[in-house]
Amino acid sequence: MSSIKFKSFTSGSCGNCYFLGIFNEIDACEAGVLIDAGFSPRRLKKELANEGLCFDDFAGLLITHDHNDHIRSLGSYCKHVRKPVWTPPELAKALTRHFITGEFYGPCRAPLQPGWNEIVPGRIRAQYFEVPHDASFTYGYALMLDDYKFVIMTDIGRMVPQALAFARQADTVVIESNYDLEMLRNGPYPKDLQDRICGGHGHLSNVECAEALRDFAHPGLRNIFLCHLSEHNNTPDLAYRTNLEVLQERFADMDGRIPRLCPLPRMTPSPLFTL
Image (cartoon, rainbow, N blue to C red; front, side, top):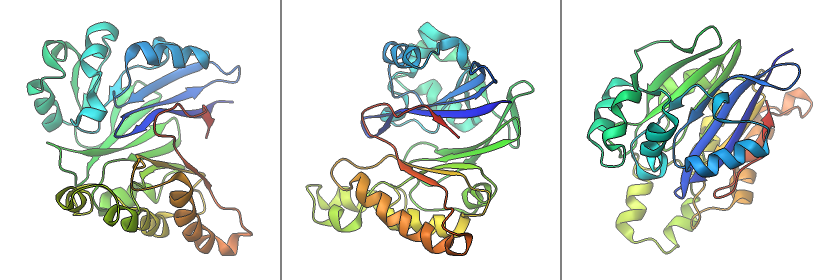
């Protein structure tokens, strides 16, 4: 019987990179993808090996947007790993002009079409949805791994209907819970940066994330991973407690059987979660 596994290598302004795969009954990866490229291929190779995995275990990369912490190593992946880089067409055009991706991106460019795209034939499909953020273009992704539904939305300035619609059907959701508003307003950031973060095209706060959970949580939801936590304006415990309170209210009539809730570490790899 197959299982779905997920691992975060780094999550935050320091860099972003995630692995998602389908594993068979002997725990070998049969199909996988990488999401974002804010983690060097050299470090990725080492961390994959720690889990008994290698570059052959992912078919290509999905990119959410063109900010440095999400594409820092994309040029290196294109040069040395040479796997497809899947993005919506508008983001593909932006990456073609980006100094980080450079001359090596072109041969790996693999634009997605609206609707479902079969990125690993017969095993993994992906559909993108646009989210508000101050990059050239920013997207979340819904993925179908066999029959398993996975959604990731990071760097999202405010919640949008299509993101909620996908999350209401998902088995696992990775969602940004970036900052606590009080910490942000009383922290070290200048006023203009504070306004950029909480102005609707920056990042999602703990409270905004919790309100989204209240909206999309459903009985089939198994896992919620909180991503892209701020180093200065949040703590894992605060993000966890803010979102847990809403989940406990939402699932009060289900004998406490709430989904697994886990803040992802910023600068260190997470475990390889079985979803």
